[in-house]
Amino acid sequence: MTGFYPHEIVADGLGFPEGPVAMADGSVLVVEIRPGRITRIHPDGRKETVAEPGGGPNGMAVGPDGALYVCNNGGFDWYEQDGILLPGNAAKDYTTGRIERIDIATGAVTRLYDSCDGHKLSGPNDIVFDAHGGFYFTDLGKHFDHHTDAGGLFYALPDGSKITRLIHGPDLNGVGLSPDGRCVYAASTSRRVVLAFEIVAPGVLAPEALPAVPGRFVTTWANKTYLDSLAIEANGNIAQATLIENAGVTSIDPVTGAQEFFAFPDLLTTNICFGGDDMMDAWVCLSTTGKLAKCRWPRPGLKLNFNA
Image (cartoon, rainbow, N blue to C red; front, side, top):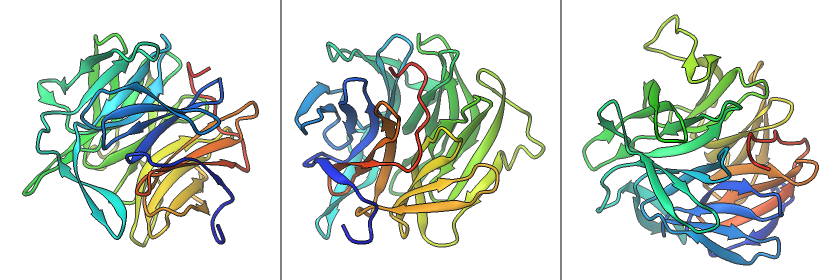
């Protein structure tokens, strides 16, 4: 592992893992996007199927009722290049993206949302619950041969009663909340920008001085570094998964934009989550090679709402 941040591989043979959720018993839940499956990885590496919602389960989080809430992007076409697995355009059987509730004990899947204000969800990607029990989620959009559907940033309630689009825009991927809950961060994949939005009430953002260019720029990259999911450290830093030219996780100071890079051995190092008694255990998804890595992070991660 020369040149890479010290880690161990706790599971392999996964079908493009993302969306890790660290559980109180030491296991980690991940999505496997290609087979449309939710999988529990036990501390000894044993894999157990939790649910099979199909499509393309992506990001997920534990809600106030103890269930999983899953962003399902509807599925991709897949191809292999130089021995690695890569997602492409919308799957041939794609119909829509959706938000799903999954009972962890039974695997039962309930569709909560597949549209907002009469417009279908394109490719829901990542999700985070606030302290009030609602959740923010990003919609990456969806690529087709000759066009791309745009998504945005949304807020919804877990009982299926309300969904609101807060920001319209292309390729928003990772999402997270500041420790005080007053700011929501979102990463724009191909624009290589982490954005911050001030929250004035649950699901309500502060008015933009220039609505056509929403959000405060936190940091950006000059090279071909694309952005995926993110998590928040207890000190407020943004642990941003970075792809391609800086494959790994970049810890970002949310005020200055200063970056601290941790390299991992996968072109698409897509996700990180935190857990353990001191919240310094970190699990990282090495997606193209189908692996879940574990490491000790230099600082504690932020405890997520409702995730015991």
